[in-house]
Image 1 (tube, rainbow, N blue to C red):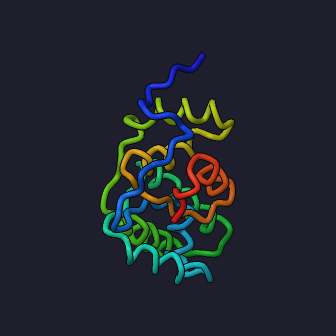
Image 2: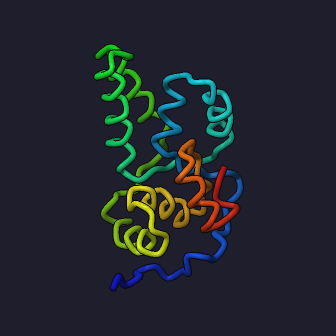
Length: 151
């Protein structure tokens, strides 16, 4: 049985802070740095934010995604490193995964979703942030936990 270290029930509203504070996930960051059709909308949200955070997992996920583009021949080595630096520069701060893991594990057990996704959700909940993602599974999870959680 997983014990929940979280003081808040998972169904409770988060009390999103204003002005807008964001947790940026790797999927949205990669769209931004690659300049996909979604990039302008995502950049607009980032420009409106007073703070942009992510769990430390973000760096590994961004790097791995860019590696996939390199491996597929869609990006050159220099581009991969430029895009990685740009994605890292989108953040104002990083929350260590170790400080999030137990709560993310408890949430993952409750919602039958990967701990990776819950790391982003827990970061948003802890800091009164909205979640900026293009990952449909993560967005659906965030909506179930709190309809106000998505940016």
